Length: 312
Image (cartoon, rainbow, N blue to C red):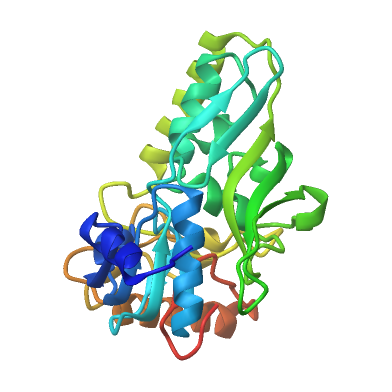
């Protein structure tokens, strides 16, 4: 915990805590205004100290990872933005299939490591530009798989008390009430520090690597990977597919400012150059309104909006 200004200054001097930092470099859309305070802790102890300091200062705290599935307003964010992308590392047991990964561990990295050890269960994750912490919170998924299928528990910091920050606690898969792209971690006071998975050991590593590479190839050839995006913008309103509904309305290539509905995949909005967050938000709203007007279906964004008057 912070016991003196010296502790705070040490983190500032080490580059862990900074003021007025552009968040465009911290999102996959490459848009967003400045953070009043931005912190990139290297471990759980620094996280605890930063949270305690923010509470003492009365600062609102927001947590981000790789910045995918995230739209930050052009005006930026007040308070403390806590970026966990430095919290990387994982432990994989090839015999038991048990895996522990820190919150900032990139999903593609973990998926490849698991496949090389013959651990089945994360092949779907290789093309998702997110982190373990974000995947645990939103139940990320692709290719018919999802985080909830193999996650057993998460280690979290409980921020529910206003004056103190409690030690790390463990929540089970059942505690998280997983649903399609949703968990109880969203909007809660729990900050994910690490996640535990149970994968299937004993599979042929070469076959898993082939499948993993095939999944990545499929995503890169059917999605606009050459442009900054957040991945899929809208949840699929099953049994319909969001991309098919949008494409059917002839909205591929629709532009507002520097934001465009991708000609490659209609459920992607891409930054084709100098887009503003307001361009992207306006285009999201336009697509929603058109689908609602023609089909009577409300598309719900997967992307989380921060710093806007209304959020998803």
